Image (tube, rainbow, N blue to C red; front, side, top):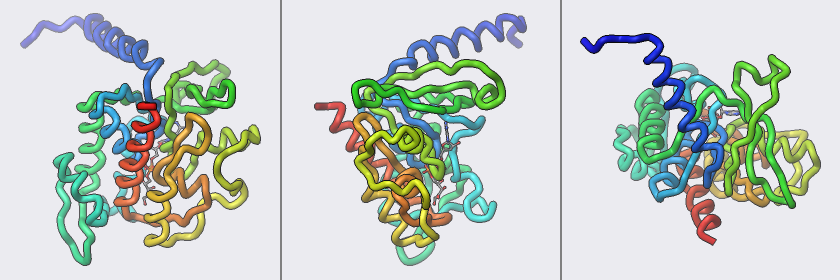
Length: 258
Ligand code: 48F
């Protein structure tokens, strides 16, 4: 067995982590939220050679996938999402009428694994609380350790990106940060209502069709789209999240290429 020195173990953790942190203070794309939509966007962008950093406030990324429906760890996806999941080696079992069952452990773990292996850096336990805006354009996010955020009077630090993606799910944290300042979004103002009542068919289409740039430098994907625009919620069906992440990756790639 290799001889162990506890301080050496701590040095490896500290130096490796800080090397990544230093490198990732400036990225091409900062993705806030490691749920299905953010992870899919991260995978596709990173695979295309884009420098992607995901900031996730919880210990475990995966967002709303893990619990499936009512804690039963099965996710349902539509057949349109199956080709991408198959490419990611995530198994989808045909159920009925164009619907497939996916083990949520395999889905969460698979999306995380593929995004990181494609080159995205995922920093967990980091809570994003605000945006940096200069000359009418988002150019970064303001973040703190999740354990510090809201608990201790300690200043945050900044992660910059040429593009920032709000993939924070039901909270649409970054869109709300702009709304609070009354900064002019390219979308209608729905500050009062947020998400609409559950309608799986409409909700799934909505998060794909409406995923877009909402302010110069800021894009939205997944449930953030519904939360930001007042679209319907959709319950435990995940194809829309996968396809929304795919759509926004294409948009961001095109924007960065210009
Ligand atoms: O909620 P989440 O899974 O968002 P999504 O990718 O997918 C939605 C579905 O899971 C589900 C659904 C399907 O029908 O309705 O809800 O749109 O993932 C959002 C991630 O963002 C993290 C949060 O912990 C979660 O992992 N997050 C939220 N706020 C912050 C954040 C924040 N301020 N800073 C960093 N991460």
